[in-house]
Amino acid sequence: MLSVRILNQTRRLAVPTSAVGYNRKGDQPHAAPMAVKSIGKASNGVSVATLDGRGPVSSLALVIGAGSRHEEAAGVAHLLKASLVRARPGDNIVRTYREFEFRGNTLYTSVSRENIIIGSNFLRDDLVDVVPGLINQVFNPSFQPYEFLDALPGVSDETAASLADPTTRVLDTLHHVAFRRGLGNSLFATDRALNSLKRSDLQAFASAHFTAEKIAIVGSGVAHDELEALVNSSFEGVAVPASSGAAASPASAYFGGETRISGAGPAHVAIAFKSGAFTNIHAHATSLVLRAVLDGTQRLKWGSTSGATGLLAKAAAPGTDVTAFNASYTDAGLFGLFIKGNASNVKSVAQRGIAAMESVSSISDTDLSRAKKAAVVDAEVSLNRDDLIADIGRQVLTSSGFVTAAELAQEISKVTKEDVAQAAKAMLASKASVVSYGDLAKLPYADEL
Image 1 (tube, rainbow, N blue to C red):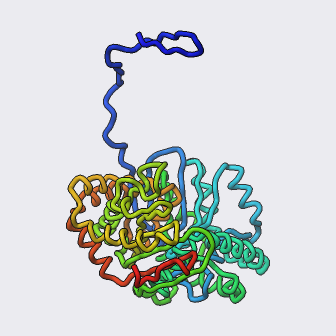
Image 2: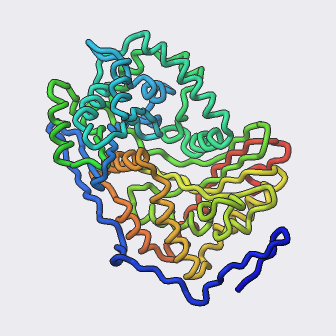
Image 3: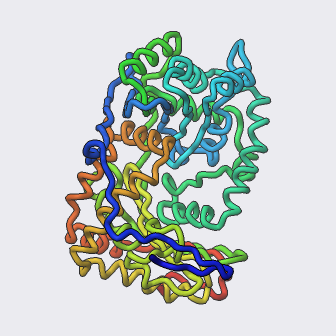
């Protein structure tokens, strides 16, 4: 018996002398049942893709190839995203909101560098109501002047709030430094851009890009046959252009360079190099493994944000952390380091971080195995339901197919040390893109790194 004295009282606690056993009712499966993956086309040429895990909650989105990289007038994609849900002929926007709310459904719009998205999360039985609701918003011919004007203050506030975050501002600027145009276009409509936009700019942008070959309707937790039938019926009487006749957006050329932004608070520095597109599945898997080799940030909730298992753990300094990031698009990508903390430490942390990238050729088999496991976990947990269908949509629009998490995990398992070393070497051979934010008197220039 073990005695514990508390407040002059003796409490006797029994200590087990044998191992505690548990009874398991049957063996646990090694993997969850495979979700059903289906791809097809509606009768008008719009792509339809589903990944059905047969759960009670469904997600649906219209993914349109009309992001900021396609802009001719700056800010039009951001403003159109904010104006996408609007009054319909013979109906009003309040009724739309209330119908979604009464059913417990969500309704959202978002914009990325390559896509505009309108989507909803709902119970599986509500698919019959959600499909026509989303389609009618995208192909709503109404662009009333008051709706256009009402959206402007919200977009301005959204831009100001987003760019007030130094991390968001640095990463947005980093794309401009790296690509200049196309993928370099800002995600956010500035007040200057909003002041020059007209309602006709939104109509012209929608006419050019809301075409059959640029739209994918993606469902998660949705039966494919049921969705395809509902899409076809919902498009009856809706004119969807087969093609706008506009030239395809040119590939974004990588340039590199440097921008310095004066600001208060901790220093934020991004150093990026040219990487590959997500359409090359093995190259994409290799980039994910390289990131996991360097970056252990997602392994533990507490402790240094640089983690303890990645090569960058040794590059960090007290009060200054460094992480790795990977941004992949249809024809290009960025891979790099993000440093946050004391401006006086940035130079040494950046140099050690780049040295860590150079040293990946000497990693052990154990380190590679750990990184591959971490890459699979990171790729799965980094996508919520909305991100998942957005990712499926951009893949379908690019290659008429998509890679599931299980298929990506299988590709990650094939990555070798040579693949990782060659990828890092190719990235470091490109001209760096560097954006610094903070006390510029203390922050080093790119050529000092």
